[in-house]
Length: 326
Image 1 (cartoon, rainbow, N blue to C red):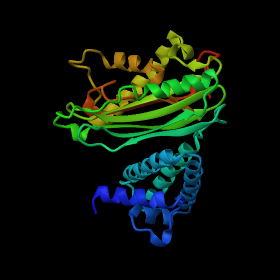
Image 2: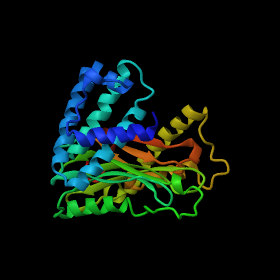
Image 3: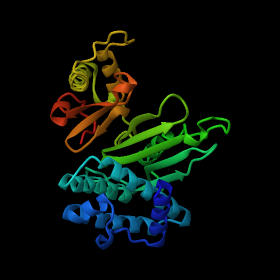
């Protein structure tokens, strides 16, 4: 069975029946069997069905069509993310992915007491082809945004899709263009909203590109937070050193030795400091902040992405007193 046929069958099944809960009597794929064998994964799947049905009931017919297409795309991504796991580890992976999806469909944060307004998923799904980009955009926005915080968040989310375009019909790779964004709400409270978005696109060129962006809204200021809001220069230098060590360790683990910067326009220390000084690279969770370095940010494209974990026990003593850390 081809991927197109499987997706078509999935769309038909979801459209025909609002209920999303898995029928274990008919479990056929490795993922379905793993979910049915794992009580935690099965409970997460049940919650997923409820969240899907609740969101579907709130949408108009066009919105329901977009939701179904988005859910089918996510199911494929979930299975891909867990494809390397076997046995109990597969069930645990599927449970984690499903719990995250439940939170997304409900507009709920992974950590924190919750946003001051109502968040809901927004979808833009478009099948690709000649002269038409394949689009899979699944983001979160405030419904009926009325406050500065809600408007600032929605405006930042809108900017993520400003570069979406379709290929020219004479482009030899026109049927391969793709554009994707997914989002999770890492933390939300009246003081701080921190959403992490992952993107991937191919719009011609030598290879696809992947990237991440964080939307961090300061509740008191009613705008996107900046790195200068959080740290002064002496404190920033300490965090730069912490992240430089972590990036060097990751490079050593992957390559056997840390990048010696030979031939690079910037030293690794300069690249890490520059990337870390952009708060759009920062995601704030329950216990720590994570700095994400996209391909090219601190190394060659083939090296991939890197990251730095900054525990709040380290960050709080250095941060400005009025910065809304979780």
